[in-house]
Image 1: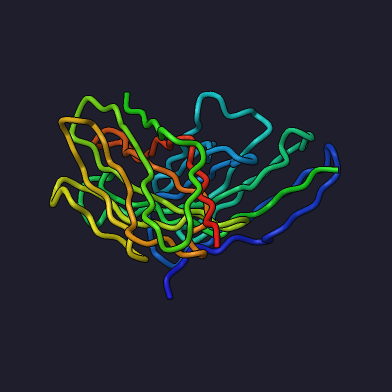
Image 2 (image 1 turned 135 degrees about the horizontal axis):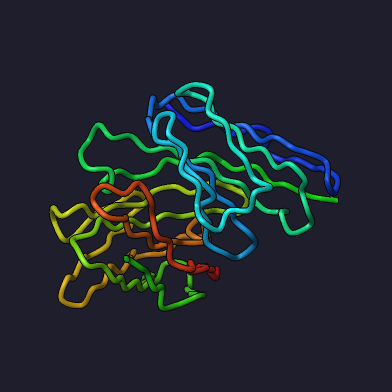
Amino acid sequence: DAMVIQNPRYQVTQFGKPVTLSCSQTLNHNVMYWYQQKSSQAPKLLFHYYDKDFNNEADTPDNFQSRRPNTSFCFLDIRSPGLGDAAMYLCATAGGASGPPAYNEQFFGPGTRLTVL
Amino acid sequence: AQSVTQLDSHVSVSEGTPVLLRCNYSSSYSPSLFWYVQHPNKGLQLLLKYTSAATLVKGINGFEAEFKKSETSFHLTKPSAHMSDAAEYFCVVSGESNDYKLSFGAGTTVTVRA
């Protein structure tokens, strides 16, 4: 089945120690997103890629970076995690084949729960 | 800019009774609207979407929603709640026609009593 896969599902890191979260997709979608979701809140968009074009949200801290080496994979790098970065990180994809981008649902992965000690 | 207001932060129902989750939106154009469900420690799953076709939209697991332009609403309903419906529900509106972003409501937590 086509899907969005995130690894690992649970990640524990130490304060200030860099961490990388991974997302892969078999949907061949051209748009990939990274969201941060804190407890009892809606997901908050950090950035997205349209193909290789990177789009950063204005309020995303510089501590968060992303890479998309090919269509299938996208990585979220947190350079120096703080306690406030503990959250669920969700990857999502969307494709443009079925009409205007706004019509397209986003397909979400299961998320990575990040704990910062 | 578009926005979404979910009118109830928490809804509690008894198993077998109807569920109503209320959502109002604001948009300067004809939006696409979505309802997503999120179970604990899981990703978001699409329940249903409205994209300017039929105003009554049927989704998975017995859910449906009605788009009412005059009321700028997109309420989610289910005739009979099941224990497995206990989850967080998000009403979501799309961006401009060439925008790839979504605007989320704050979410409604549904609990189902046996």
